[in-house]
Image (cartoon, rainbow, N blue to C red; front, top):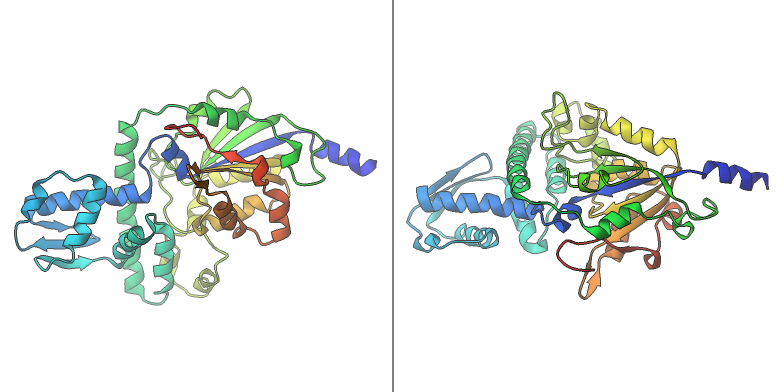
Length: 365
């Protein structure tokens, strides 16, 4: 009886931590995937070849030896990507420089249709831990990609006309059901006391919903924002965040600070965002909602900190659904990589029968 009373007190109030990934922006009609970004970049390169017979930047330098007349047609970004890939095998297009980072990115896009640039970066970094010139070159290329990405997202976000999705608004506000909680925590369904949105994107799309909430809420852009200048607020955090990786541990034994230039944890130390997150997860028991996050290894350290916190008593996946299936099971594979304790994983992740698809702008799900 005493133990039950203590549990009632501990779980009298519960919070909700909402994790937002790129799929959330895509659901609102924003073209913010890395594939969208790379296709836009390739479109500009193709335009330079058509007009100037030449393109040069930190990642790629190419020169056309002849005029490619068929380039006068109008290409969609997806067509431009495929066309330039085809041209790069043409003997009349001379490749003067081709970054290994870029080449790996577009090769993976062709095979997988998606790409995690940050994971690719770390793999290349692991291949060159003691090659100082290669490390410096790779860091410069990542900085260049980050600048290009910021310019692309600013353009895309400015051109957008964002609208809220009623189903997502309902999902944000829903009760925390006892059936969704870790065993021996909740004794009944609970209203949420406070919501914190942990936004892994650089855009402010979640604010469409926060202003409509009647309960206390906060918005943490853990990877910075498009408005950030790295002086007064966090700029784009673009790098890798898996300090559990065995190869990363080897980096710490090497006296080379350049290896850590794009490791996320050191960016988190520059501003208060990470501390604000810790304050929230330590304040009360909480449920995690996940919307459009890939749960990739590039965020493993941070996600492990959240998921294995003793105050985390539920993790609910709002999966992507299409006509012939959904990605719920695939997302459970991904989320398992962030747990050291698989027993904790099974106790906290909400079963599919109690989960649901994330709302979409374009069609009913």
